[in-house]
Image (tube, rainbow, N blue to C red; front, side, top):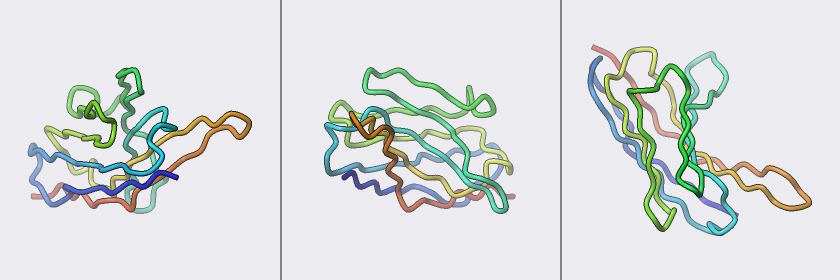
Length: 120
């Protein structure tokens, strides 16, 4: 089992920045990748960014160049630096951990979410 706790959400004006944090605990040796998703009101949850155990990163096209995902060497903290935020970035942001378990397949772990509101 993996537990994830997000922090750092809030209200910011368009063009502003926020840094989200996610603290991971539990069976971290089983985690293959850490990432961030978001869900806006009335919309489905969508992928934002991922960082693999090897340090490779990938982003949703609409956040490339504005958002940066990073983690520490212990792989128990992951951050999402969000710059030049726009109203369409308003959503609940969720930390995600991916485990690929032999014989089982993909297992997803989620945090409780943190609200990000971009408004003037």
